[in-house]
View 1 (spheres, rainbow, N blue to C red):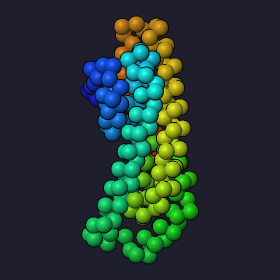
View 2 (view 1 turned 90 degrees about the vertical axis):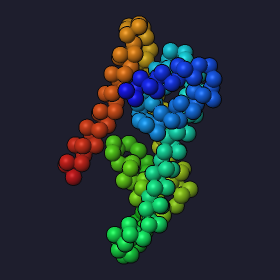
View 3 (view 1 turned 90 degrees about the horizontal axis):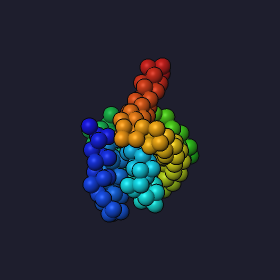
View 4 (view 1 turned 45 degrees about the vertical axis):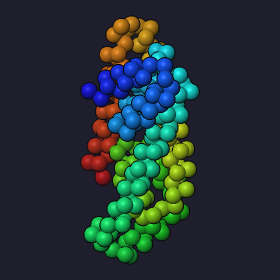
Length: 192
């Protein structure tokens, strides 16, 4: 299970901040919200320092966002894929997005299921990379910080009240966060 492996990797990284940072970054590529929750729980447990946790979470998530943008750019370079969108539609999409990149990226960070299509579309339409990066950094800082703070509070509660069983609660909380995002995305998808 992903949750157990990320936690196990963080513990096996021991006191090495570099190994912990690498583990957290890799964890964000797997499931970023779960990695955020579990990292906060590890901070609460004293296994990882906040100064390692937050920068690693921010870095991993923004790198993942850039990867999605890059996939869109790569798709645009494939003639067969590029022909699927007429030159006129491509031009209209790029024109519409040009003045809205920051806002679109910011909003999509907070809508479950919106990042993949939005960020790859930004890359496909060759949206301004620097505006995209700035928006990704700002949105990630806000969302991840909020989720991290909530997870710290949950971790504190679990440690005080569940003792040795706190990991069952932590994994349950991580699952709830991930499933809530997926359910909201599914409801949004079926209602549109």
